[in-house]
Image 1 (cartoon, one colour):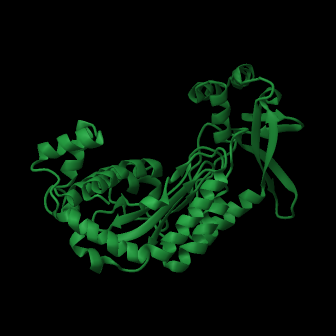
Image 2 (tube, rainbow, N blue to C red; image 1 turned 60 degrees about the vertical axis):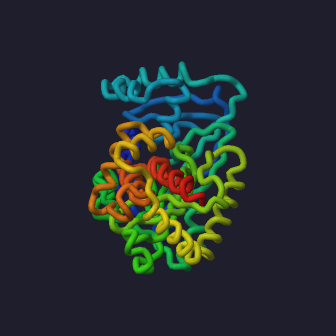
Length: 380
């Protein structure tokens, strides 16, 4: 069962909420159905036109007439026409859909030969009769699609049999716990623009890491079938006392974020290789990493708070405010592990502040600051 706030296609300026899925199979079923019901229509910019009727917006091209626009495809169309989406929304609110359409048709690129790929979803009723087709996305000719079903099927095959389960971390920062995540059981999300999954080892490993605050190996993955986000994945450690995520990826795994262009299959193959390595080696790697973290817990980062802030600013290019916030976070009870202002203590402070974002990619970027700092000092 999935939990989602549904949206009328007519409300094209409001992005629908992502669904939280109760199980991996539930997510895979939904992703497979959407993949099977989707097809790509290849066209060029000069053959695309827009229309409106009854508060609904649609596009037509090459014999495909009146394809309703989703929230994301409308945003893409506005971007390609170099129009602010909120400008079109204001016109729509003032019941001037004629001006919305006129702006799109006038300013949308009409250069012959500019290839566009329209992702169309065909919906059917129970007896197989077609109900409606909609334009999910408008992508350029260089776009390379990767289906959510492909991404999560590999997770199912490699990680779940090895003791990983999709779980929502008990993140204690306000940003990650508020709103839609509150009260949910799994870390499996999927919507009209992107998908995201958290996976943890489901065995108790705290006995090895009690002095560090408890750590549990995990892996996160995200993808966008329509081009709203990159395809990416990272291994990490979940700090059980603070609920923070510490991105810690073996160097040999290579780059973990890929734009959907060119040969996305090359990135997908690297992803599968990484999953296989994580499944086979997370236990010995866990013990090796713990040794490094224990060294970090007794390695001084700075003599005092001022010196720590200055070092974060100089070496990691953190702003003065961000550096100060990270050092303040080291004083919280849930982050007081390792010697005060030790490398480990400061890393937890940075990871805590990274958790103040609700976006997966921002969480990764901000947490990687702590990773960079520890790897640089520990020479690992």
